[in-house]
Structures are given as structure tokens and as C-alpha cells.
Image (cartoon, rainbow, N blue to C red; front, side, top):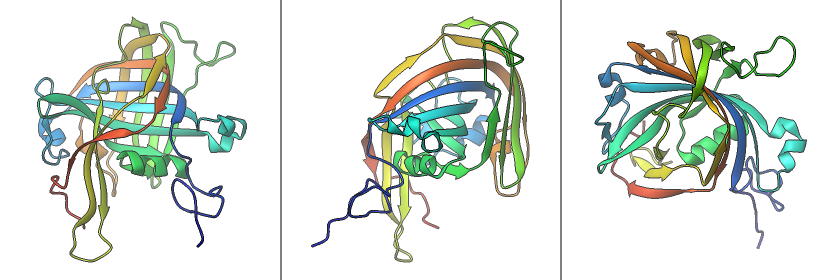
Length: 270
């Protein structure tokens, strides 16, 4: 009997070709976060049952740009940078489940296939996109991490720009914002291969960092614009009121999640 190996497809005799390694997954990244308020009804329409709006500030949104280096436990991907470096931009809201407040990623774009694969496993709704952000540097014209530093960020998908921001740092901060500060409540969905059979996988899960470290957070102000596109709906989370913007360097370890409920979302399989 042939045994095939690999955490995800393609599975082979050795497992070398698998798109992603088994967890734990380790991340080092620079995050630009822009928080604002939108119409709570636009957040509610993205929350399948049994999730509800957060009781406090239900229209709060965080739009986050991240410049990542990631690897498996061996760290070998860091010496082959094409396998470790990627960028992403994602929209996070808050929700409530059984009296607890969670964060939830409702849209996310990445620029590498292995990041999409990890997202499918974790319940992140990842799609391909083009993401760029200003990198800090202690020399030359790049901004330092200091008061007055300015960072730009852009997001595009399918040849259309979806968002752009300019963040100006003001002062050190005790937090990196509040919208993305909770465990994540995500769904893992997979339609049945048989027509009319609904979802073969329908799980509500809790996920978050197994370990976390971070540098000094900075708070500032942002100029943020969202744009309409034929196949994207980020602009429905329209900007009604700015809250704040943040910059922080972080290190994160992800090593699995916890099943909250199964088969209760009522999501369509179409």
C-alpha cells in the first residue's frame, strides 16, 4: 500500500511538495492598522448566525496592512525568502458569540499561494491581491519609527485599486487598536462535491496566537480611501468616522484553534 504525505495538497511519497508545512507557523511582521467606524448594518450583513454584532462600538472596522516573513518550526524558509516573504491586507470587525467578544476577518488579500492555503485552513477568506506599504529604515529617505513619520499603503485586486492610506505617526501608544485585539471567530466552509448536498464542512472556530511578542506601538492619524470594484465589496464598509491609525512590529506563533460549533451557520453552498 502506498502512503502519501504532506499537510496539504499535493500529497506525495515524501511530502516535500505540500503547499504548506504542518503547524506551528511562525511570523515576523510590520503592521499598519487604520481603524474607523462604518454603518453597523454593513457589519451585521457579514456575520452569519449564530454571530451577532458586538455590544460596544458595533460599527468599528480595522483595515490592516502587513509585511510578513513566516516559516515552519525549522525556520528553513527564511533562508529561501521566496517561501517566507509575503504581504497582505485585511478588514477586521468585531462580533459576539455566547456573550464573548471576538474579532473576525471579513475580507483579506495576499500575494502568495502558500498564504492562501494557510488561510483556508484557518478560516480566513483569502484572495489574491497586490499589496504594498512603506517600510521603515534607520538610514536614507525611508521613515524612521518616530513622531512625524509617514507611511503609505495600497491594496489592489483584479487590476482594481481597492484601498489606499497614508498614516502619520504621532506618539507611542499603549495599544495597537481595539478591533483586532480579541480571539478570532472564523468559519471553515467547504461545499459538498454532490450538488444539492450543502456544506461538507461547516465549522465555527476560535483561533488566535499561541505566542506573541511585539515592539512599541505607535498611534497616529490616517488618510484612508476605499474604492468600488466589480468583484469586491470592501467599499460597502464605508468610512463614516475615523478613529486612529497604528504602527507596530510583531512576532506571532500560530498552532491551531478550537471548535466552537458545527453545522449551524446557515451559509449557502452555492
